Image (cartoon, rainbow, N blue to C red; front, side, top):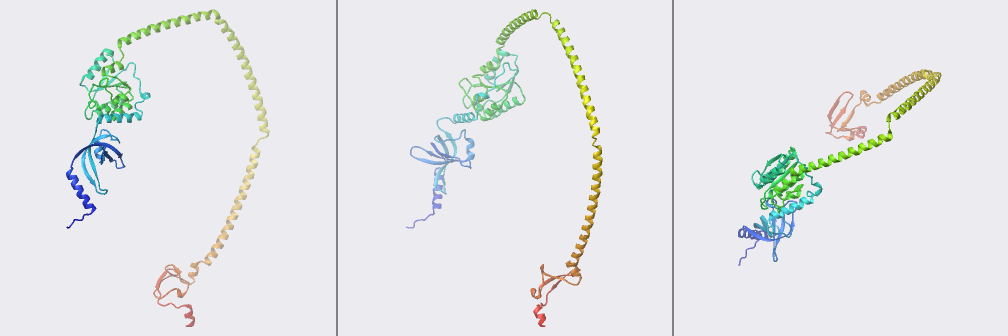
Length: 447
């Protein structure tokens, strides 16, 4: 019996081929555990049930189709291909698509984004801006079709028809609707189109309202400097935009009631306030008039006091003028005394003496410097003569030369051998030569 012997690699590859061809595409449900996301961005986890477990991987490019990232303990439905990781001999599921079982994927994405934005503080009450009592312009961001815009405009007409309403048409559902809504909010703020924004839409399913659950819409609302009211869906519908907005209206009709005051009630309130203000002013004027009359009786004729103050002022002015005259005369006397003392001790004489003495010192210093320079020049010439007497160039001029081999100075004949190249430096010029014979000093004496 000839049994075929395979390497581990060959056997593993055979198993991989059988597994990938036999289970080309599978759908499996299980609970996620051991979820990890390394630096590569891929998601590695284990799918398990009560009796078994399966390793799985969701590569980074496939994650763009997820509505929300999976978590440990979440039950999911995975569709993909089985494969064998040869380096470890493990089989695993390559996930192409992942759905959440139980809670819908959109609801999970809603809860995840809600928690994220809440942690960032976008829902904080301190960020909510108050609405103006009577807006000058209202910006209505909505779809030009549908009942929501009709309900809002109908109620606005009843409440306060004089307030202009600027409509910014956008799509309120479907792909790209969130981007249009966010851009409309940004443009309303950039161009200062009004002093309150109303974001409204009729009711619908979570899929229909999903544009108002997008993060970019929430960030645009949070960044709005103009107060924003959300009126999305029916009273039971809640979106992320409702939590970020400065005020939530349960319906578009209720939004018009919150934004615009009732003109008739406002007029009656103004009339009432006018009556109260007139009564208060009349009472105040009457009270002040009574106080003036009482003070007038107490003070009598104020012109008598005025004459008294005029006489007192004239008397004090005369005293002040004499005091200033005396003070000026005293200061003049002091100035004359100081001037006479200064003339006696005039410093001009001392300055002239010091200038003469400084000139003499300057002359002596110049003479000393010149003498010192002459002495240094003489010493320099003497030193230069001595240096010239012992200079190597002077020695070369007397017929001597310097013999070098590759910059090594040759002093004895035994330092070179026949064939060495030598450089001889003369008083004028150099000679390159080759040694033919070297005669050491001892050989020369014996010869």
